[in-house]
Length: 146
Image (cartoon, rainbow, N blue to C red; front, side, top):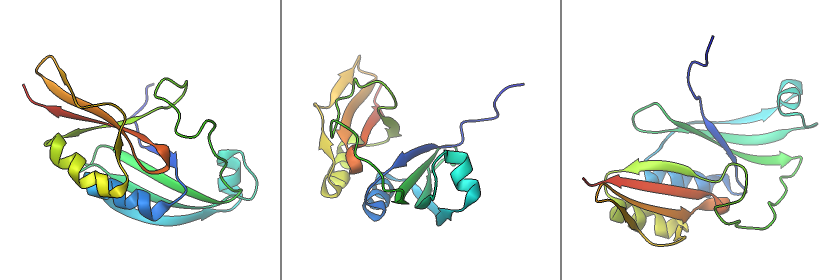
């Protein structure tokens, strides 16, 4: 027996609307929003008294999903240190393939995107960059050029 697929990546944010705006500007499609609470949620996550809002977004090809969550109860705690560097142990980035890296960066900057380094060229095949998005999320972008 094996897994069927990777269903989604979940990220906790402090401003759900801003995070939705960022990822829809990137090109993801909002599938829906929901309020989550109740015994099943508490049992699943291992916290008591969960109340949160979620938004599910999908990539244009329909294969990738991102679940954004904003916890109302218990209140989400800040990660320490804030805006950690890329080499912290644990989940550290989400990567997306884009067709025009420069255009994508231009569209994301008004939503708070900040490059962590510069746009790099990998062996004439990819242009790559890391940027920090909403709630300190590190987003990697890759444009196939060769």
